[in-house]
Length: 590
Image 1 (cartoon, rainbow, N blue to C red):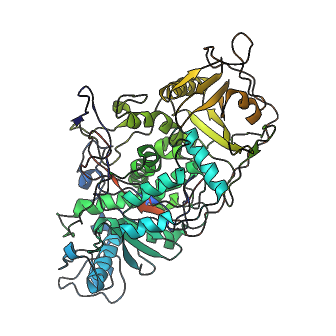
Image 2: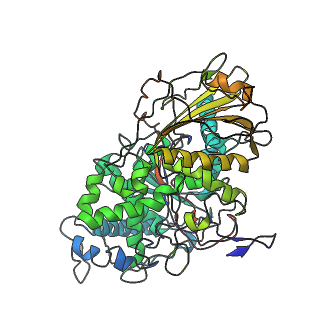
């Protein structure tokens, strides 16, 4: 912990580091909502995580069931480590899982050395996960500069960029003065350590040292799990090609949770029963563009391993494999495992009621609406903590961070994605509009489990608007006069439904949605009167919302590795221990 420059506040902030070796994801699958299509889909969190649920950081061998996992799954190596007559679990391409390698990673790993590292790591993943690979997986290494260049050179349709900008603005994460896709690309370019591409069946490792393209063994293990997943379940097809933010986080909770959990088991053996390669040096995350956007994508890496471990504890690896036939339907089901298959998200109905020159923005080749889910709603209330350097705590550090028995932030499930403001989420739908002048507005309807949950969200939303400089100018109406979020906002509450209408000015609210009625308490047009959000009857003309995720663009990546979570420090630019990271970006989601 550190003290800020003002000397008055000591706060806990998660630092996103590249220090943990994390690799990629699966290209062509799991494109995240509002994320531009990249050559690979999915950033992943590093497997250097401790067992928060059991209350023991570093106790993976006891709490994760890792002690006997290898012996139960792998074939027994002969004393002379001779090759078996046929391929067996725990042996790959001439190497047993428990063999030692004479490899120096300091000057990079090329040629025969790389083949040996990949073969032994594959054998170890087989032994831990109780699986057999169908085919060898090619592994290449690129420099960070090459990776950044690939991401920044992507071509993104303007309708998709406009939709993505509005969606991140609705979550108060990226304001009108920034480009949400550029923000995501910068986050990815800084933190991603590698990815797996289902399109090319290849793992790409990102190295910070262009002169020594080293491989991080744990990152490689993580990405090999993605390669196996793709061989068995085809991550480039439904249900893994999710194009909505909430659906993508949900499926990644399984895909990334599985890979991160296996990486955890792998790490628990390094320095014990296994000799592992030294991890290459990783830089810090000082260039991270936006911590809130990062945390939005990080949720599968925080909650996913716990979700997968629970399934394994209940029914072994067979129970985990069965999840791929029926993955979580929402991130809510990963945050709250007891809701899996018991609480499907509501298909929120929202018709278009824009007037005049306002037209719906429909991004190509993906859903024309957004669903940000419980995670996206939570980030509304968490991000002010990071933006204010800890001075504003709508969600307090004690609620946001998961502490272990030593009083430190745990690294198995370090963040708590549950809050009173968001835990009652039951569904949401976001429509984006644009007028002839290029101005944007949106309508965001959220369904809640109870009227109390809806009112709790409204109370928190008002605090968020106030944080960004807003003032209430009518019973249902707010206005932010200055800054990147300068706009007008109208809130309508109907029992378990909240509708947020956004427009550049108060006068334009009813043009974006005709039933928005920004009227002051005295009956005049809203100007400066204070008030509270009122409850009205919901429109009865809404058409049922179309549910379903559009196919992912080819070339997206799932499960990529990136910066890791570290111990709490004073700012996101500080360095600390390694943790977990989101996947490399797969492309914008809705």
